[in-house]
Length: 358
Ligand code: ASP
Image 1 (cartoon, rainbow, N blue to C red):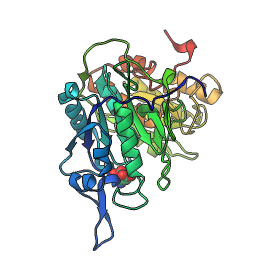
Image 2: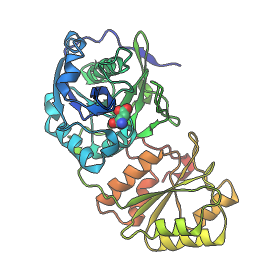
Image 3: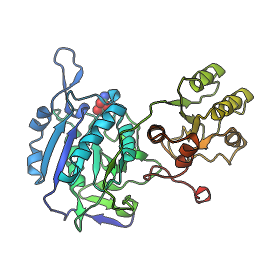
Image 4: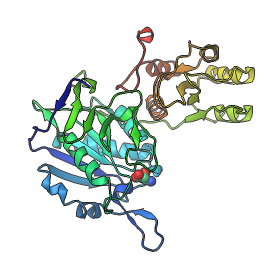
């Protein structure tokens, strides 16, 4: 790789706000049931004397009670946005400790909700609680803080919403959790890592998103939950498709298709999609493949979807497409306006081929 910068020389005293929302990192084992339960932040700090050694000023704020990330959603995303917005001027960067299960959804949502972000917001967590000997939590937390504090010429190196996990710093809205057991739990298949942490933290700076304008942070709190995911599988029945597309109040659907955006050509299926699109429902086509992009022009099966009025999600992750739809409909955009915004990148969440750009 080229254009890497070795930033280990950076040593200004930065101030970081650590937001503990919950997740395994701060959990302890219930001695009676053996189940992992959330504990309070003091437990985490007691198990991390290293925090003091870092040389940064680290303030903390915690969700009360801490949450398992499988219980998080728009309300908790708004809570995180509010904490960041209320404290934006006081800190150089933000580290959000979060359960891994839905971390990619939160990271995607935050990337849309924090407009004009010019400071790092780094999400991390762990697969093993911080009090356990083999925990991955300490390294993840310490490196996330270092990244949130990293500056060059007084400017933050990574002014984005990111996930740092194991060794890689990834753009948040490009990530998915891909492993329930391994420490290396996240991947960004369609966008390169922004940094790699080995002996040094090596940044791939040309990949980092930099705000185009210097406008002040604009936090957003409007999200619309009337979104569904329709995952196709061979043999999917008309009843399943019909019941999803007829959910009362439904505004957007993320449809997970095969390969480069293909789906069955059966008439009942295409008619149901077309009828839903005619009712103003935005159907976004993303692929079930881990990597690669939807290209509806490539095969007849994909082309038929285009004709039915389905919108391409290109190489978006499902997590990013779902939260982007929530965000766009939350702001009262019409179906046509939503489609238009799905065809452009708001904050680096999707790669749009040249031929589609206006
Ligand atoms: N269930 C936990 C959560 O997502 C798992 C974790 O933190 O890794 O909150």
